[in-house]
Each structure stands twice: as structure tokens, then as C-alpha cells.
Image (cartoon, rainbow, N blue to C red; front, top):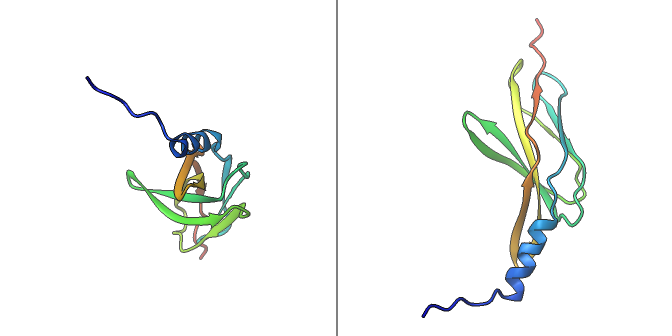
Length: 115
């Protein structure tokens, strides 16, 4: 006979926290040839946000930010290049990081190099 342990209060709390974290609504816009601004609307219950950038076929985390941060400027981009980003919220529950869903991917095309 196989028995299954009942979920603990901590497990239930973590699952509940993950369900409450909505996907942020993000926006990307070029600032110059080498800068891109990523902004997003805050998510209730978030302790912070993480930004990922698509590189080839993979996503790479480019930074984690405080819950009060609503935009960042990323630099060292290449001129006349399209970049794709997504943002997701996280919270800390019972010494665990709980991740929300990713935003829809957003893109920005940096300005062309001037002569």
C-alpha cells in the first residue's frame, strides 16, 4: 500500500504565493544607439523583479531589481539591433524564492549609428 503525505503548510503557502504573482506588463523602448529602457507595472505582493534577455535561442538573466523599481536602462547594446526582453516578479516565502509568470516578450530596436 502506498501512502502520500499531506501537503505541509509551507508547501501550500508557496503554491498560493506563486498563484498570486501576476505576470508584469512590460514595455521596451530604445533610448539611443547603445541604451534600451525596460519598464513594467508593479505586481502586488512582489519582493522584486527579474529581467531576461533573449540571446540566440536562449534567455539570459540580465538583472534582478527591488520591488520599488519600475524601470531600468540597459547599456552596451549594439546599434541598429533588435533586443527581446521579458520580466517576472518574485517573492520570498518561508526562505524560498517563488517566481511568478513571465511578461509577454517585448522588443526594442536601438538607433542606427550616425556618421
